[in-house]
Length: 269
Length: 267
Image (cartoon, rainbow over all chains, first blue to last red):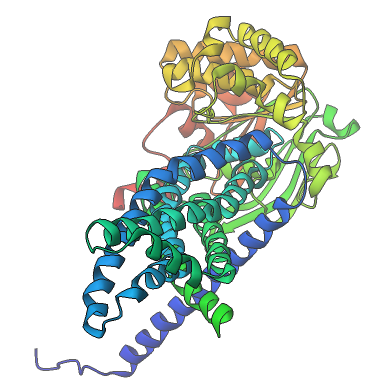
């Protein structure tokens, strides 16, 4: 045991470089594969044939069935927002700003981001699991052999539904969120109904709502495309599908947060 | 490899020439040469992981070979895209190993899937054909209204067979058709395969490691080992092939050239 290996030998450094290089290479490769997947999917969105019935089904799955989750998120967010800003604003005698703070935060930020994250958990996971299982059980290959393009049959309806339905969900969440703030302000903080609504109405501009909806559309695209991508490239067996589901939710959530920053920067600076 | 005489004259239905494929540096197909004449049933036998499935998927176009040529009816499959590719796919029917039925659709919708979605056939007409095809594989019309998850493995295979033949394909692929079935059900499926293929006058390409199945459905047999075809011949020649790899495989012996090369014992 006399010849101890020094910590930093040439080969150790080489190994480290190799593994760093390998992971960079792998990451770049994944980005490339993902980009091709996205480009292909978008091309298929704009070329026939379409499957209206499947698109409708996804509208219902992604839009209608996400309503309770998104609604709950919105109402409690609005309520908490009113409570918290009240605590802060009373210190400056600025209670009258609460209505505006609730309205702006909900429409610009909280409704789209929180709805996006909730839908990533609900829809992104289910898309990845469903398509992943289809991949593992060769159902996707079966589609191809039956002359049906899996991109058009599986992916396009989901992307369209996600991109279109999330803004609708967020619009509803805007209303519910503001209403949550309203309830707390009127019944717990002693605001008068008329002035709260007037303040909300005065401060809100079309741009505030529209920017939130554009974000929502982007998030809907991100959630569905990440679900489809990870499901489509799922590994084998139950473990493969499980991993695909995790990746779909995590990557969609992170991409939502990153793109939220970028979109906010583009809209408001 | 001795090619049969009759395929010299006509264009072969399927012709693979020097097809190579590697996954992440691991060579799976190492130059496959294979021809299947029209109306012939060729069965590829070989152990697990020898490249059988990949060979099949290369012909189907589900996997793109690294090099070499795959021709169906004299047309290069590997370079097709768009509508040409759809046209080619319309010639194919495939029975997947795990049946690969769409679990969100009813049995009859599964059988009629290619007709309705792929060929835009009217649903009533497709339903009628689906019921007819189900009858052909010995299933009652009532089964048509069930979901695949409600069926036994043998029945799922039958439904998958009905789906594969629904559009009257010219070429049918069978991926381990009897795997996971009891011997009697396996024989029933074999009989159905022989009948269906004969009935359609189709060309059949199957892969299996079930020798009873191979003997029943094959006209010719090719043995694949380490990504190459190491023996090709008529099914009647199988028992005196003079090839020790084939001998070991068809008798299912643990000792022989296949295991020696792979040295399983040291694993």
